Length: 78
Image 1: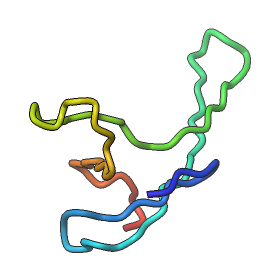
Image 2: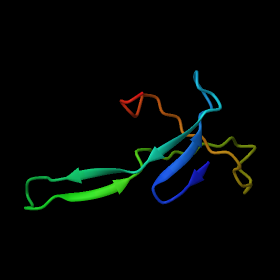
Image 3: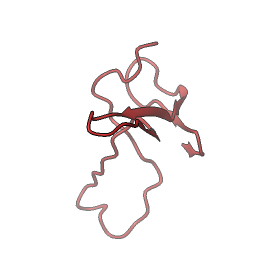
Image 4: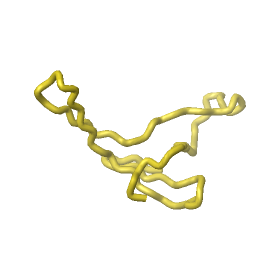
């Protein structure tokens, strides 16, 4: 995994494409709630971070591998 300014390079660990390297780009979210006369644009990665660890591993040891579980397809382009 590599995190740079505009993309995250990850390796797929489940499903039919195990071992493939893919890039997750930052995308622009536009926010306009109607109360303001302007639109706020925010760039962020389309992921939700989560954290899970077994009790035996939770002894201030660093994580070497991090996984992100995406239950549903994130991108519509396949």
